[in-house]
Image 1 (tube, rainbow, N blue to C red):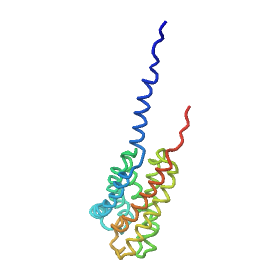
Image 2 (tube, helix red, strand yellow):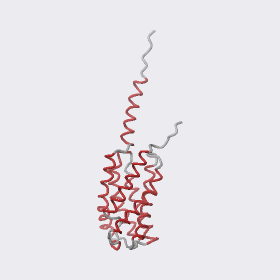
Image 3 (cartoon, one colour):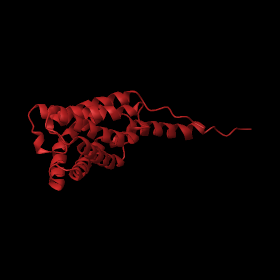
Image 4 (spheres, one colour):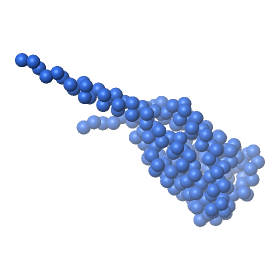
Length: 208
């Protein structure tokens, strides 16, 4: 009596191979992705101009919240476009807008805007902390050690404001985000962090 051919491999292997390709397509971070991420530094001047146009200079707490939300929205769109291939969804946009609004608002409310390099370091650190906390849940589950994104973003934003202020940009201009020198510093640093996190692999998942 002839046995029916075993088609298990024929059914499961294509699905596995497709699944592997899909996972590689939506989870791995390539050099092209990093290049796209680096280009997002150009979004910072646009974000600053947008925040300034809608909220005016950051000279009051409500302006800090509003300018942060608008600038964060612009940055969020740019970063999402760079990271969507690795599995980041459009919630990144709202997370960035909300994180910068809260971070800049709290930073201004408690510490003021400041007029020295040290003052701007604090503004940057609190702004970055807000962004990192808001963005982290969207990285969680995609890469191991994603919680490192929170302090890394705080440090990167602090350094961004430090560099911008140190080269002579006047804090009295009261922008919501730093200029090109600071954005280059921040973006490159966070790009390096993304690369390290991506190389660490995906978090272990338990199966039932």
